[in-house]
Length: 417
Image (tube, rainbow, N blue to C red; front, top):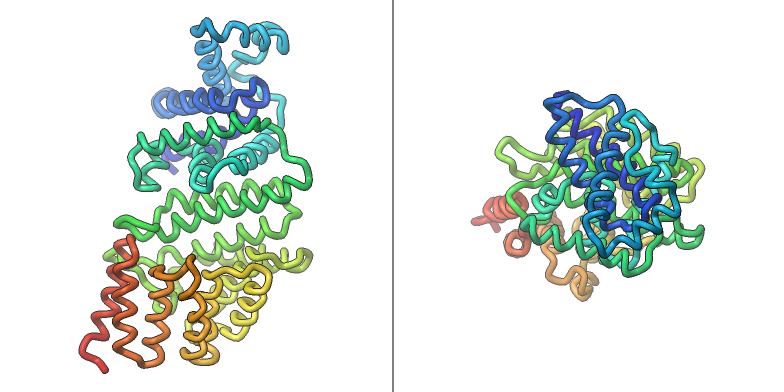
């Protein structure tokens, strides 16, 4: 591990802890988050050359709090606020702690609270993802912008609006009550799942994957798992990420093109990640009612435990998809279920499951529906229809690796039939 890598890991670890401490103490999420970003920039500039301080978290807290102090003192319009803060705490008692002082507030609680705050229902999904990556993940605005393939100025405005909406909604830096917490946890899990999926199969651009996003999603899921060890769906999501990400070395060819699951060199799969994921989901299913993430993880475990594609237990996978479709019906579940059914009952049976999706506005015209239909038509020997479906899917995707893969599949069928 290089020195720069160590600094980056430390910054991502301590960023949410420091932000949580500041927001808990002073409120004003927007200003506190900006101050933390300035402290992270200072650390990224100074630590590689000067060395990491003995207490990195206290160093970041000191710098960030001084930034807040300077801002408050430079704005005459904020004098009343300074007086209010001074009345709550004696003469800026927490503004500039000693460099070796450890904060008294539990960092873990703050990280979880930040996750819930970033997934506030007042925010649209795209803003929840961006704010989570910045406030909890510790990514810079430039990094998040690159991950979403938008200009940094655009992402900066998106994040700024998200913070303003949180302030306008009157959100407080406290954990939601039990009822709201259960509802909000679903949003937290969905946001982490979206971050992972965007990293695993980029929705657009020249690369198939974005390792910084998958890595960050797994890191945040581990934090959440540590904070909520008794939640089966949290365990299921982490297991699903581990089992899916275990394929990453085998799913991209030397030229960067996509390699489908059935054609992957399974010796290149990450055995340690598979073992951890299988153990995690196996243990969770012994005590937790199965939820959507647990079922998806169980399906991934069945794939992972097959030595070859031919040895895959498709009947077990079909049974798991049927249960998943009952408890969490979703067009993407149906797409995957259709492939599994085709492997057990034949491609025509799988194609029959796709027909209702043509009338579903969420999937009608979507390139993934066309891609799955093309694959099943190919298996059924309907060469002409398969070629047209592959080409339709290629036209519909904005991911260049996916587009190349689909075009190659279509070209392979040219002249046949």
